Length: 196
Image (cartoon, rainbow, N blue to C red; front, side, top):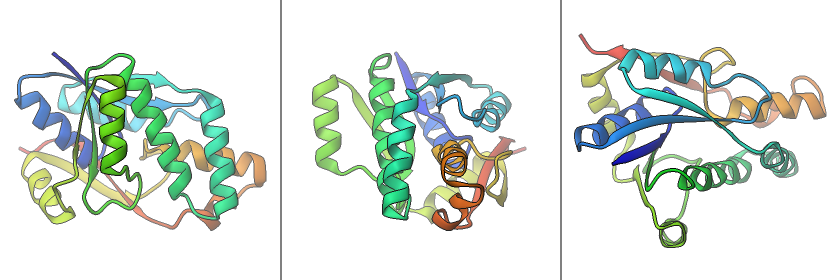
């Protein structure tokens, strides 16, 4: 049975891929892209280093436009990123019966409520699996035992999160540097292979 995992190249989505793979599922790592910027490249590299099949799923530009509009109006990214994440799950549900991602208990975004998950599963007849029961320290400990990874300041070159194309479009529409006033500086972990 195939499972599609929304994949950023980080330790959370990599851990989910390993869990489902070890449960005997055929895991495909999927990175969403809107065609604004090739943000999928770091995820492709991480997936290759782990030996997982990776694919880029093209998403509708209007979803990105809508998310950017919401983010600009709100002045913070939460609602716009959640909109993109829900659209990504809907896309995966067109091809996979089992869908996973690396969202965990203490994530601020993306964040999907339990009632939304139940509705999504019932409506699409899928199983959705995430790391909601795990906190940051647990995932860090488990990932550290499995993977070699880098922790770097998030940039266009090391990040395959939705944020990258959102930032690019925000800056295209509203002027260079606009995204810096909305997205806080943060650090990105990127898996660089299996622990030796």
